[in-house]
Image (cartoon, rainbow, N blue to C red; front, side, top):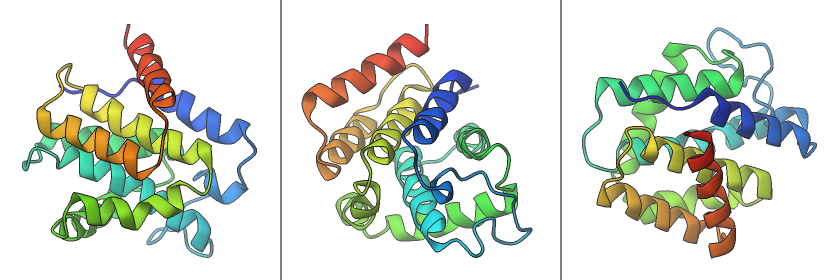
Length: 173
């Protein structure tokens, strides 16, 4: 079973909280049954951009296993303290799968502006994508391509990506 470390999710969630993000970025408001971000379009936009990056990583090799979907659901639940329900996650996943047909570069170009609005959000997106790639203890070439393309789209410096990857490695021990 692929696992995404709880401490990685907690660290990313706590970093977003620590840097003083507006409450809408916390992704932790009480969930509406149909749309957990109803009434907060900023949170919805940021969450969906972050979610799409995770989806792009899960879909990197062209096939999505049940365990990968489980990891994605677990990551969302960990980040939102279970505010986002399974049916909403599945709905978003299906939307992302359709959008992914536009190609990796097009989708990263679409979500990068939202993610780059705040360095903590960009770091979170990169870290979550890399953590999903590392989750099964091996990185496929297609996953590596997504990591590199994401770093470029987010305009992350090499030193910063190395630092984020080192944190993930330390958390996996």
